[in-house]
Length: 346
Image (tube, rainbow, N blue to C red; front, side, top):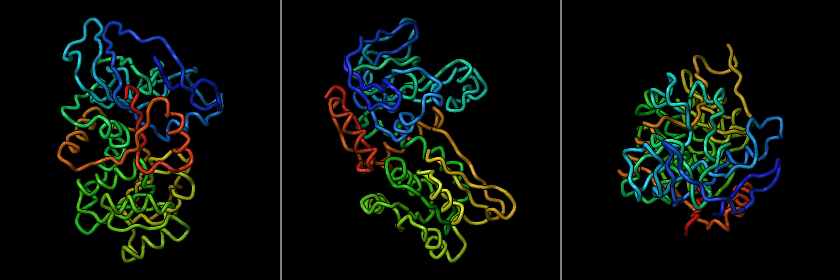
């Protein structure tokens, strides 16, 4: 089969031919319908050799959806032909966090060498994908796989981040979304669906700010050195009750810290290497700063339910498997408006 792989440190993704996978005991083979492209992939491919804790090559794609092609021995609850989405942050399944469905926070993943598909293990940008356990598959139940597949990360990650701040986002409150690309434009929709807060979107790109407005942002602000002052102006000097940074670079984390309100939340989701200093006088009183990772299996089900209710609609660009390297080039150059989705089987 064809697969898009990361094969050498610092190299570009390569389309290669690899053997068709076969499911072993407890495993499920998917014929991939759709696979998402993400900045996290670029972050991994930018790491020096000493920073990588897993071997190359591996197939890219940590957002996957497909139909069940074959079942390994012992698999129950699924049938060939079922349409499913893949829950990406695989864990051991037995530790205290996994027992709660929080495999994104598995306590033994590093010890056992468990890696998410597309981020160390073979992922979804291929004609077929091997899934280690049926518990990592969620029925799509009639949803369009092309617009649904980004929800496994670009929907689940902001949902998990926002859910924690919902009690603070009451009527009259303000939520700031920094970076309105793949995750950010979904976060805006989730905030509108889950809270009555006013949503202020920040980005450096006019097209992405236009998309932010289109999907529900009440206000858009150019993300520059004056952005935090603009947010404070919009909030009568008080700042925002919650700030979600989907870029995470030093300039944006500085903006996040500068525009959060007393007792507010700063949530750094992006992988840009920025930090927020915490200490008396460094940020407003009683601000909570967190850096979450992905979301739980139960939360993925909740996100898909929001999609069924029409509350979330991901803006996508589609590419064939042969065009997948081009999708990564466009993402790297900041030209993808929304989410890039690969269709490995047409």
